[in-house]
Length: 157
Image (cartoon, rainbow, N blue to C red; front, side):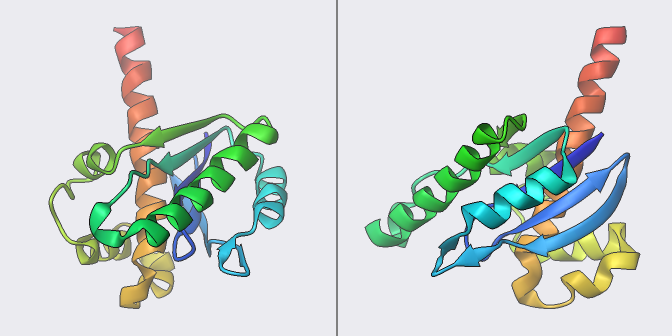
């Protein structure tokens, strides 16, 4: 199953995961401080994902109203582009995907370290502290893959 995992926001990333293998990780395409919907649409069209798994965003009062609004706009662009392109998508709460990956209540650095451990061939893409969005995008894709496999196994039982 071709899955694109997305850590939303302008510092986020997208990870392409196909049949249990991390294929590619790219930073969120941005233009003038916002997610570039056109570039995102092109990427979705080229990759033809069977599912797009997006981390669900929610307001964070401590971030302030302007930051929350900006994050909400970017999140909306991602979901809108997926819907407009008729790409199936799901949103996953941070607690949901982190629990599946054993990262619940752990700092972002733990996500980066786990990504390096899971995908040593891609370790260079996760080497810097600022690459936590890349790591989380890859882990979101993997968490969705686990969820899909679990659902199939339950149906067969």
